[in-house]
Length: 107
Image 1: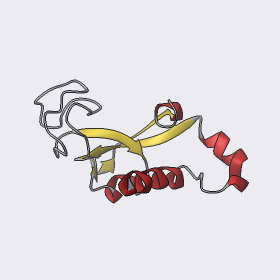
Image 2 (image 1 turned 90 degrees about the vertical axis):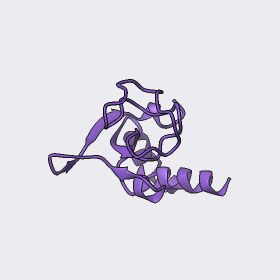
Image 3 (image 1 turned 180 degrees about the vertical axis):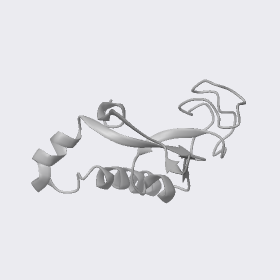
């Protein structure tokens, strides 16, 4: 339970949703969110797409927990490293993408 609260708190902090006084900012930031591919934190059967070593090309095909070749999208910021993952780097840059926030919050 403590770990879930820490992850939820990190997610809210990454979104800038820490206090009620910034509610208008929070609502504006909830439309879209920048995410990163976070390696090594996916649970078996809960990866977001193909493995980095080419074993499979589909989401949900991870066969073991915390496999360093499997990844999930997480909000950009310290969350990935905070939970023991590593951000995917391609051509010297962290792989980022903008996605609808509803996929991460109450979606």
